[in-house]
Length: 614
Ligand SMILES: [Zn+2]
Image (tube, rainbow, N blue to C red; front, side, top):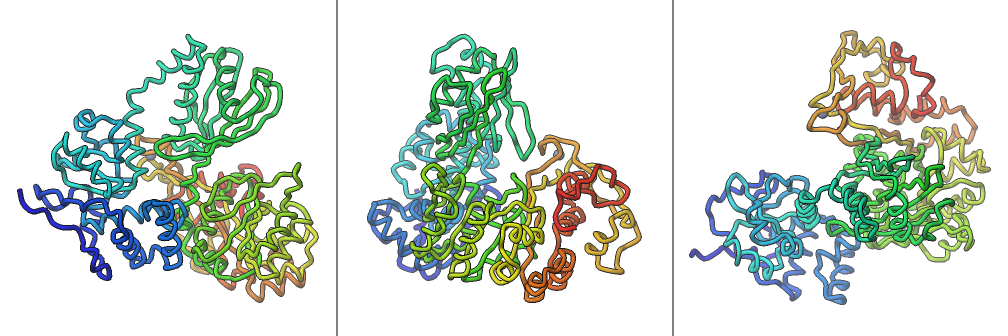
């Protein structure tokens, strides 16, 4: 047996080793090479410091965060990696990637860990329970046996698994990616009909509970945002909302609906069997190594309680602004807003436009361990590590306005106010923004310029708005088109609304030749109904000097937009059309999201009020 190569020496942290095959597909270019021997679990500070310094070197964390995490890790006897993740200082992928570099083994991107790669035979040999416990997954990559590790420091685990399977080539990914695949595999053996059948026959709590677990787990796997359970006379239908669209998941006998309601009410701490009232609550649900927050609401319909569960997936909060899909110019503008030491930043759009996610992504961008961030929200949707969050509670007189007043005595740098919906809150938010705090909030307004008028409706005067507001971001969520099945259509630029065409191509440069765009997706095996996930379409208006002056003079929205345009402002329609030309959005979806963009297709009712700045 050859002497296995040593891992990167912890003595020379200043020159981190190159990743073995960072973006290469699963197989590593070392056929039949002896598997690299992982070092013994490094309980001392050597290993920790090394990971920390590598992360520092890679620019993933700064010294302040590292110091803070190291002292927490020492105090609680935890691994540095877990502490960094738990506090939102580093993302699981960043840790896994760095660990892979540290051990000189290949890193597999979490989204490339697929069920098809699993070595089923090996899974059966080791047992799924052990694999779940050890966060390991045997893979077969083009016939070569590999062992995917979530925690390479767990040498006891590798020994245990290799005692059964023999030596294998190591690959590293995130523990959640491994847990997710293991969960899917254990799910495959579950028969939905069987579960429903058992629940039909039995009124034992266990059976109904299994049904409940199944409904939620399946929803998580299908990446549903909401679960709807709707009773009718004979059945109860479970539907999932996936990428904004409702989809029937399963039907259960009406006789079991009330039992299911009882289980859910029990979880949410709601008075059992009081079906005739409106209820809401929240509970947590453990799945694939993650703790998911579920927000629950029920309304009494004539057929019984109709229940909706929103799945608040806290991994969502860690999506970066780039991952949310902002166009490059919008990212630049947002970054500019985040660099201000004080002032007010607004995110506007209707319910379901992703405002909250955007705000959290902004917060995690500035959450550098050296900034004190306080939030007051209704409800607290996602819990952000190392950010202090307050839940509005009218009964206890914890309101938006009172919380902001109280926050000012807590010496924060950044304050997030869930929503400005009355004059009192607006006044307090302005006061905080004018006394050295960067304040984020949301408003109900249809476009970034409308946010200005809305503030004035709430009693702020033009002077206050023009001196306090730094910028406003308006956005919608739009489904991306599936490129594999989308129908193409020839678009004559002359049929675009002239203003849109000019904004897209530049004045006087609108082409005359028709070009091909996607009309709409039709649905195929690679997508869900012709759509491939969602992205943001947005517009970010920065309050440049000329814009401020116009606001002060109570100029019209049109004048303000015109002035902003001269400083590079691009509207939501510009953003959407840019995506159309890039082939990422379909004409149908754009019009459904922001309203008509072509003259010929303008007869869909007046939907312009849904859109951004015209
Ligand atoms: Zn498709």
